[in-house]
Image (cartoon, rainbow, N blue to C red; front, side):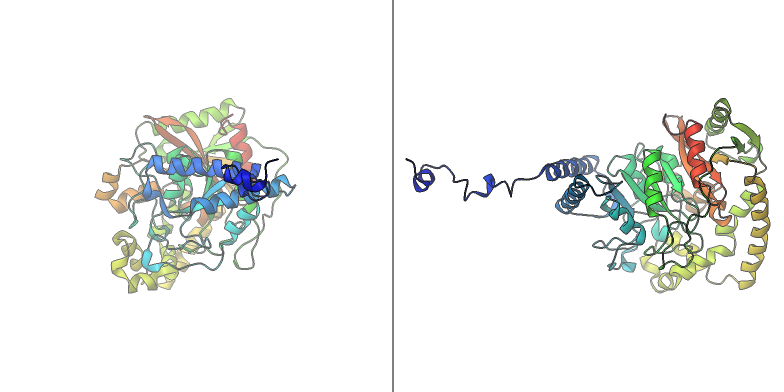
Length: 458
């Protein structure tokens, strides 16, 4: 009879003492699945070699352990609709354990807790992969205004990614994250989505709380989602939604999902589109035509009041709110701030108070027109942005190129509207996107239009 001692002497192991054969220490199915999933993502992160995407990337082992914990809980019957998904977070949104810098290291701090939106996503089973680069202080639509370097487009590195949620857009487009969080004041969640063929959900203002988000323009900021699938982008936005005591302007979704569509979509006529990139006017017309072929009645809409409202966000008094958010820091640290961002924010410091009231009166007139328009439409379909410049073109004219980007996005939050960026084909080999714009609280209706209009990939 062979004893335990003789087996050990012979180079064998004792299952009673060897941890490798102890069932209690063997990895579970959930742990194996988690480690495989996370290992694939980290290999891909290394392979694509886009360090400018990230400001903070969590350790691989920590992410794998979080995913394993979530998958185990789901297997045990816990309702976790986002279990097994990895998401990236724009670095002006707090993630406990990662510094929040808003792409300005001197501004950085260690958050004591997750932002409300991050906490809610984690409670639904999603796991944070890391924090992403952005136009500093979320000021820009180009993705180049960062000390961590410009975020290059996922397919054409000579072109911009779109901003300010640049890193989030590229992380999803490259398949590094399943979905990502951005913020959208002037279009920052929709423009990167459009330039990468993604879905960008811009919820009704206030329905997603901003607790734990570094403000850009507090009254107009909205946390947004981006994903390669409409279902996932919308689900993540739904999980984040709901009033929060830490964010006074937050509000619950107030209008139930409509039982049916009126199937009326508005569009802008060519003379109001302005100067679009070559081929984009035709691609936009094709998107409108496609809606008509799917049974929607398409009607022309005078979008001039909306375009006029859009100019107020940067050229009017509302830009003063950016100084309220971070102006004292910018004034005290001029050498730590991107020069273009610094000029925009410091230039807003001395705007007289009377201009705020004059601009608000003008905006009220635009909002009255908007209510009339959206009372008769399921959605207004517009190009998401106007062109896709190269990094060199933006460097040569940083303010002018950026201003063009927001022609069709700047007005949406000012007028308290909902919006959904959707892919609409490709032009010259690169993604082209349109946006569906609706009245406040009509977020679900926009999803219905996207699905019935053929924008959901089906």
